[in-house]
Image 1: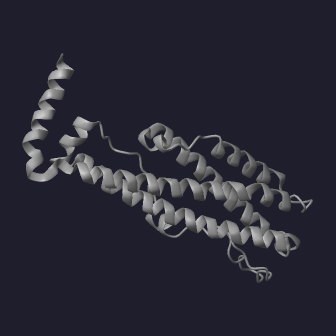
Image 2: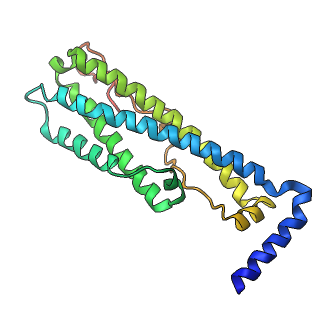
Image 3: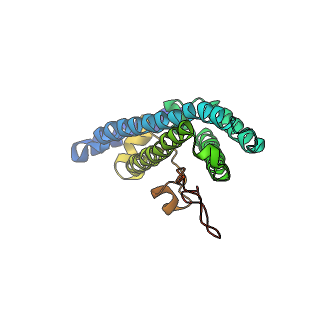
Length: 214
């Protein structure tokens, strides 16, 4: 009974405020579609990266002395990242979204470590297949960053609409809730993704290999 009374109250409130401002209904439709589109692009780029990993690992295995622990961590991280079903509904589940973000972050770290270690293997760095895969991976990391930033902005716009008056009344009546967003712990890291490229020229004595992932 209480729920019914509350629903009727909200409906009446909407009826009074709708002529003034439209209560943001159309804005919800637009921003929700923007969130869906930007999320789809995030997933596409993460999948693109995941698809590169098997070939990358197979190429690295050709270097007999390459650190097995590093490869194992990449393989395990990819397995965890791809085991999470990234449906459109995931953005409405904060706990699941956080788990997804953590898994993707783990894969990012494992791949960065692999590229750093690869600097110690001149033969691997000179391998054309490895160079091509590294270039593709670097390009994908940049696309991921662009897609994430677009998603962050689209969700921020949607969530502001959910919280703002009078559109918050529409949100309450229609069941619109805030969507999960990426946690930006370091703005500089988000705006500039870690490089996974490398220079085939040997590093100078006393210096560091160029292009190592940070």
